Image (cartoon, rainbow over all chains, first blue to last red; front, side, top):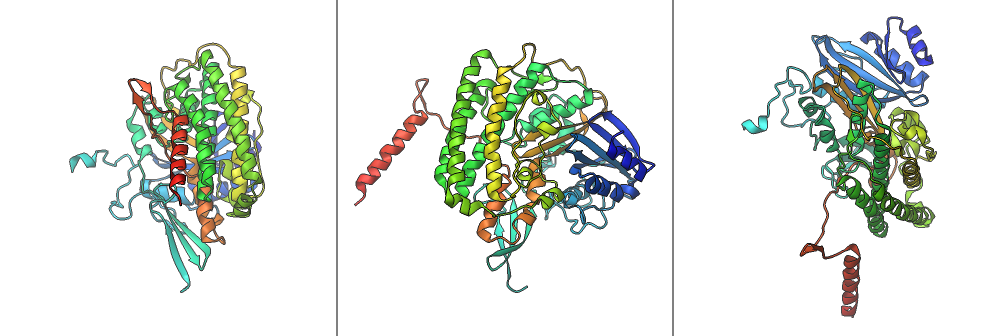
Length: 150
Length: 392
């Protein structure tokens, strides 16, 4: 077992590790332990955040935090689930600036709330004519070409 | 607070011709803070991608960027290959590597030219772009296109590099090497350029790590990362090259890293051409099974990251794309702080934010090329002479 994987397992015993291949690890953790796990991977293991992926699934809003361990070329992906009736995840932006933009992006495109974010304003969509209740990367977003209907 | 003012750069950048809005908050001449607004050109690739089939997606993501147009489809097919667990055909892997490195050469030469333009050194701009032209001609010969190469496919490459094309590639590399050495010497030995770029826009190692910046921006701040070496794909595991890393973190270090990298890329392509395996350029991949995959590659600006999730159908459930500038531009907030307004324009450009150039001119008459670059140069000289004669 890799050092980072063993360390994470001892820190968060309920973590479930899935090895896709030797360079790609996926680790599911409860969302309450996200900050601890991210701090461990970045501060203790020196990993870099590649980015985050938010996915609308049947089980809820799944968010993947892709950490890259550049010494070994391994991707550690933390997987947390935010239920759709309470889509909240603790913000990492105050201690880890690399998460600042991607949290803003997930907030506006998927409707995930990040309490504790210093500046949770939209990053990509228009400031003036965008319906803030619509989240384009959610499954229930009406995929139609509005430009053609005008 | 009364002596604080806002100096806007954008929403349409006057020099980079790109829609980004930098709001410099200044006290006198000193920049104390920066606000970055994005999204003026948001095209929703992550939204469109799940509506397309796996065959179409590499062509979609190729259009994300006009300069690193090979990096996105390459990272995308690497992610799909990660889902399938297939390795590309060995010859296809070499073709992909060669195109990937050619792209780095043309992109870095483009940036060196722009950097010259930004500091008012237009000679460097003109000449760097002229030398870049040879690389674009190689692209046109081997892929049919100067900028969008459509070279990648799950399981290998779409087009082979033919033996009769190799001499022209080597000749273009010879020119590129000679001229990059010349530019490197011209840029690095020039006391004016050094005075303008050294200790400007410093991004410290700690800041680079905190912002998780990638590529030359990270390597110029002493962070020794390179996806090609750390997580090798295609032919990179067989090749030997140096990863230039400098500790200074200023604009000068960023320029130097890019120039040194260009020379390494030339060496990589020569190694590839010398040992290209025989055989097919692609392995057949029938379908993409359910699963998830991560593909990443070192674009000229840093790591390009693609994540794909498949449910076993012919379209993805989710496609996440992260271009290197997304991480690098965010770090400008700390890099410009404390500098002057004049330095800020340079610092913002030093991470090499993306820029597209696909237009060109060719004059034909009766099916024959009428004007070559040489003719244009001659016309330009003649015009200068005429102007000189008219001068009092």
